[in-house]
Image 1 (cartoon, helix red, strand yellow):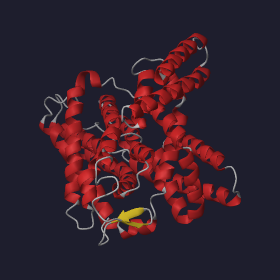
Image 2 (image 1 turned 180 degrees about the horizontal axis):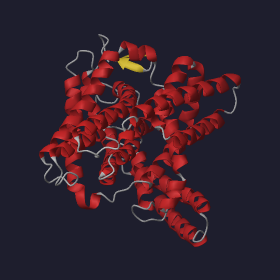
Image 3 (image 1 turned 90 degrees about the vertical axis):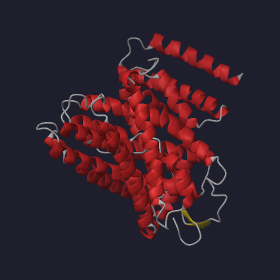
Length: 444
């Protein structure tokens, strides 16, 4: 069978890699490790598709299996050396997602988009924060802490739990090639929410500085979140402008400019410690609104290369997952995952009370917000720096939570899209309007 041959090839490649790279420098080992991860991604994606799962789940699990968190065939220093490749992939996926943000549609549906974003941030945040606060005497991160510090942990963890990742959701959408009401709305809302959550975490850190004990919060971090937000948007707009100039000057080398743009954006973002997803979203938004013809050309190139792009990005993400926190606190992570799911669902129910929000999004949309990656990882690092005493424990807990959500999120979303009446809104008359879909009466 073909998949058995793939497993045999992977085993042989693993053995050869470890023999020839035992004493090699990290750069050489990382290059070989990337080849091994790509082979594992191809096998994992094929097996996932065979069992009716999203390919992106296969990529993540393959990376996790080969990486330092599980088997360790690809070592931690090799994964770190490949960080720029991962960020370049994130930047390109976010670039494509940002091209869904057409300003005329955002303005036309601003009230409905704002209400949905508010619902899926505030309700999960409050649900998780209240849970942590009420069980603070037993919760691992707040045991023996004063009430002010417990409230600080609860609010910050609630904000991080409210974050979602549009990247895995977009990968499932592209794999199934669905362009119905639910998928169009989710891509827009997820992009807006991804940027907004940076400010929400910054706000929670400011509240923590007021409520927590003296010295709990590192003061220099308080201005970091808004600075990251503004700097990322500025870099994204500049990157989009440069890309538009290049595309206007030449009709050739589409794939070349895409790959080059991704690596340049990733390098500058790493150097300036900005958020690569916000950079990509801002660049895509600029391109689609200021240079639509060039943006559409770029989208076609990204569409043709979507399969290898998702494979490289998510197998590297899986290899970098840190699940050490799951050993002792997995019941707490599962409890928070369940609470977060209820919060996402009822946040959309609240948003659905507005006549401008489609019932299709209210019924089925919450599963599209389950995945977590990208911005959440960066914000976890920011939180670690903000709390010198227990930030490391909080970051480890959040990374474990991200691993759970990013693994189950694509599976749940694929299931939702395949339900009758969800992905393509089969039970309602849908009128296409640009890149969004509206139901009769102008509702989002």
